[in-house]
Amino acid sequence: MKYQEFYQKSIENPEQFWANQAEAINWFKAPETILSYDHNNYPVWYKDAELNACYLAVDKHIEDGFGEQTAIIYDSPVTQTVKKYTYNQIKSEIAKLAGGLQSLGLEKGDTVVIYMPMIPQAVFAMLACARIGVTHSVVFGGFAPHELAIRIDDCKPKAIITASSGIEIERLIAYKPLVDEAIELAEHKPQNVVILNRKLGARIPFKKYDIDYDALVYGSEEASCVPVNGQHPLYVLYTSGTTGKPKGIVRDTAGYVTALKFSMKYIYGVNEGEVFWAASDVGWVVGHSYIAYGPLLNRNTTVVFEGKPIRTPDASTFWRVISEHRVSVMFTAPTAIRAIKKEDPNGEFIKQYDLSCLRTQFLAGERCDISTLEWYRSHIPVPAIDHWWQTESGWPMICNMMGVEYLPIKPGSAGKSVSGYNIQILGENGQELGPNEEGYVVIKLPLPPGTLTGLWNDEMRFKMGYLNKFEGYYFSGDGGFKDEDGYIYITGRVDDVINVAGHRLSTAEMEEIVSSHHSVAECAVIGINDELKGQIPLALVVTKSGEDIEHFQLQHEIVQLVREQIGAVASLKDVVIVQRLPKTRSGKILRKLLRSIADGENFQIPSTIDDEAIIDEVTEVLKHDKIGCFKS
Ligand code: COA
Ligand code: AMP
Image (tube, rainbow, N blue to C red):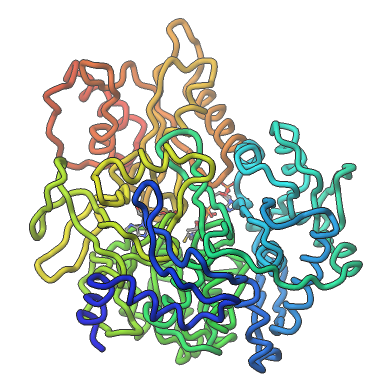
């Protein structure tokens, strides 16, 4: 069946379409109600199903006779390790870890925070929770204790599972002191911290609540899979919003496994048994959907890669991994390709590896600029597919569906709407816009299975943030347009969320931290264009009158504050001091205007501006400090 027909079926009769897809799942109890609606008229999929995600990702394949197939390849250039685990092996470790968690008193309905580097045990921990009906919340290892504490207080875990350290380029990051600090900062106190000692030399301060991971696994009986109801929250994953407080995206179990299984076949075009590699981190949604659950549900071999595209040890790493492990389909962020391109512009490393196994390269996480796409295409002869989605959706919303029909690529566009997503472009008043008119990217309800079921303990924020802006539609937070052929172009966020090297961060949160500095009277943090990372934050601050602080000192202190509170991933490096910030007459900071000045884009001076002269003042400062478009 061709794309258009397939897509149309999903929109015209979603219930029938997703009833068909549900047949690919080995339910404990098959759903009788496919689609229903909650009190917000928001879709609920497979409400009365019973299943277990760990069973589907692991045990089922063993029952089907594939126990000796490799499930996980752990490739870690930073520890110079390559280790393979079969489905039989992961089942044994996951089931024992699950048994161990039960012995600590964890049961269906509890939550666990997982704060781990890119090691197989991170995936084991997720699946062990799923096995016993415990909802996990993985926190990206690059987040500082303060961020971890916010998440602990929000989802109130009974236990935290962590490891002794992560490794950044030439740097060991001891995790345990960070976890201890987060627990001290948090009001909620987890009962236990299960810690895997990687024996890499990191300091592991001992606390009464500590449990050794290895001892727990080896001393426990295997737990069996606990059936959960279709709506049971498999995980909560926090993502940045427009306030300082991250949002806990809640994922159900039944809709998610069905959507992921569907996506592996129809979007990624990957067959069972093949090697699939998403070079991301378990702390992000890509890691949840396409390092852990998606490939394992589809009986693929998944690669857990602990390294970076460059400097681990060089820009050949990606090609080595693809070639050595015979990867069929790969997924990464454009920023990773930009980093490789910078180090190896002529693709000399690429020529050294046999990449004949690679069928498709997927790119997502941020806008894919045309020159990066072209560079990739000129060096590697496989389709390079940009695709668009977000933590909330859990799986792609715009894509060239490679398992259905390979449509011509239009560089700059992420492709057409994926089955199940009725994507439209609306104007300010909710009117549908015509071809090539830029507006808000929205999805007409019902959303398909697998997307967020809400925000953890915050129904009001869920409704306000996603459902209330345009009645009957889910608001994505992105802007874009659709051309006459139905190809969609995403132009960027319309809110204060920025995307730094594929990491989603909130400028509002950074502003809170910057303004907590004792010399700062007021500030604005904006995302400006960056050649490597797509966007980076820039802080513009007005100092308190009478403050006598050198620019470099203030910059250093603010950068440190942000690193301590959010983490180094925030990548705030530039702080400029301005006399005043441009504002509307009602006192709202004109952040969009600031962005346009820093990026050297044409802009119209808003009629509501309080004092136009500030534009020249700010421009002069950015020029003087060589920031953004004034760099060279
Ligand atoms: N734990 C602790 N610190 C971390 C971390 C982690 N898990 N991940 C990143 N950091 C730190 C880095 O060490 C760095 O610290 P520094 O400022 O002291 O050098 C800082 O956070 C920024 O890291 P990063 O964004 O990785 O930038 P980089 O300059 O080290 O590397 C790239 C640049 C492009 C190679 C890198 O950003 C990259 O690989 N990007 C792809 C990201 C990706 O796959 N995202 C997927 C989302 S789908
Ligand atoms: P996250 O929730 O971290 O996955 O970030 C989602 C956001 O990243 C989206 O709302 C977009 O702003 C951006 N994004 C992701 N993929 C793409 C893409 N292919 N093109 C443009 N923007 C993207």
